[in-house]
Length: 387
Image (cartoon, rainbow, N blue to C red; front, side, top):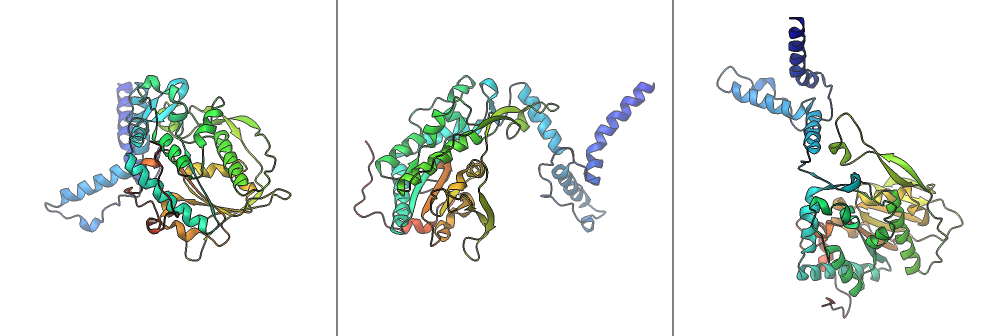
């Protein structure tokens, strides 16, 4: 009898725990919609036929602010993952994980961009490049591939499509034929891939991969500007434990699985500030070097995404007299307003699926500064298709 009462109490506590936790504000896991749904005003409650509608509003508030919601979502995702079913992730070999929608849909779609759209997009890039060149500013574009592109063999047995002549390949070929300067991040990451250049359980490249891409960016501009290239020290690589990104969704509930990753770190020889580029603009990250005795590159600006944030820890900013980084998806719509009088380098960094969503001349996200469409092409320029 006592054991029966004990189990009844336990079940009762399990049932009311989410409600109690929600009311007193003690979440278990992060509520997925916390703060998006407000508790309805008590003035809306009436003792008539409308009271049911008020109850529905309370239920909607509870669903969005449930103290156990994040816990339940994660538990359910992990339960499905344990049985090899996940709406979001693909399990590859040796612990590699990739986003399902990206690998199955978005990357193959980027490979199918039409020749006409490729041409129109290259012409748009040339308009920006020409505008910058007339101001004495060097331009370059960097497209970082996804890990399923660099480590495709890890996902072949998971049904990820085998890709040839990818959208990234086609864009970089068009860059080369049309004299658009670019840093071949795909090439250097493939050259260095024997030491993992990406996290197995996260979208991004790790600091080892970021070091080599940033290294190539620096080398490119030293050569472009005919500035003697300083001696770059070889990276000191150590191993560290990482648990992040997809890992937090996929691993068992009671066991946080951490992967061992190669880690590169350089002393930060710069002063970091946050300030508007021009009056009235939102503040952005700026770096002024404190690296004496080194041939420095002139002031630069990089429009990019979360991949560029890693450069801060791998020595990249040590080699510019000033470098500014701006989140592209927020501010590239006004890119021309961020060019300063002393800017001499303009970099656009993208990740691979942005050649599908953002880079195209007719993208649906209003990614480009509209004024670029009206800029002139270089004199006597004709698009070279390579066919």
